[in-house]
Image (tube, rainbow, N blue to C red):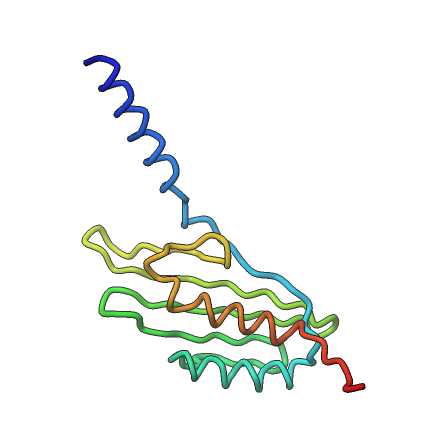
Length: 141
């Protein structure tokens, strides 16, 4: 009986430790874009609209875009996109504000660490922005 309880305790401990990623630490996706800010902004605007995001703030002089999407009555996802105008370096922060009985909880995601419950609301968009930014076109031969 002690072996069974010990085994079950070990399984429970492993399950708890595997699912306990701390989403309160800030995360970001960083990459270099092949586009200047104007071209980047144009295709990102279209992608944001397709995924149901609204552009809340845009500053072309600082290379900043903020987009928001209401997931449900208890959750809002914000994308903060910072574009370094000198070297085309891009940093994207995904922030999810969740209303819970304990108050507002803020979670930060990137492509590899995220709450699976909210993956469908940002993951494909983030991958698309990165892929479209770094792709290289090859001429037809």
